[in-house]
Figure 1 (cartoon, rainbow, N blue to C red):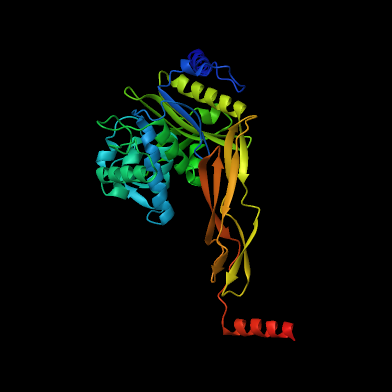
Figure 2: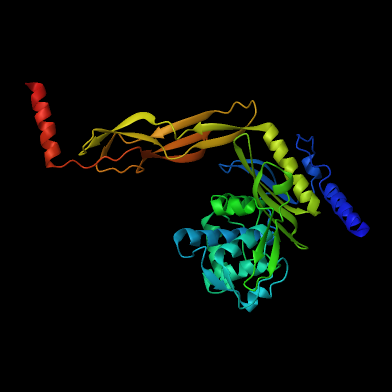
Length: 387
């Protein structure tokens, strides 16, 4: 009993020690003293608030699994995969080194459980099973990963496997990683699993594997909503995470930290500085229709209401006096038919002379094409006016 109590005390002190120095108030921190070789903080629009060497190439270890998760979730969304599909774990997958869900080779597992074990516990064996199911082989899947990276504008990223285990010619950057995390965070399933602190995987044999989230910010930083860790001797301690505070969503990436504690500590310090010194300004509000109306020709209606397709906010330094210009670009007339949601123009947002965003302008309602009967009604109405 004494040994058990002593163990609990030691574990508690270890946690306190690891997170000592992490505070929720703003820290007067000299960023040059950070151990991270590169870092970046961006807002929801991709605007860079803080950075050091954001385009410097590094190994990012298990953060590569964000791409594995993204491609998997895209296949679920498209219907090519179903969460309740069962797939067989290969010997190759089960022989993976590093963090695992300890899958049984030859046994069947639900896609849903494999996704969760990758996102929560960074399971290499589960990642490889998903890669083999989607790509036919892990190497084919790696080609898909690299194609998706190019599509997302991750121009300084190259993958060599689905797990992030050490490999020749595999790298990414803090900036590219922030793009990737922003993309995968659009999936609700990813956000749900990313917030899980502890869970378990029940194997077909009845054996259980405990899944523990490797992202300690989920437990120790209340604003954190998602993230992914990574560590190898080559990569150092890495963390990509997302937080929301005061309706401002930020993504923070730190690469190459010297200790596990520092990757969490330095991420929180970056968040604290950004939230203290920047504020979120809503520039475009999609809940408000645009006052300009567009004349419709050949339609049952003569005009159509329009609105921005989505909101746009931009993080700015507090008390800054930036020159913001919102240019609504619309045609003078449109030809029916038009459907609700059809794109009919653009809103171009310029800040200090730089274009930062283009937002589609869409129809608020449907305008059907007029038929012969509609034409005759209009003619008779006009005739009645003149008489």
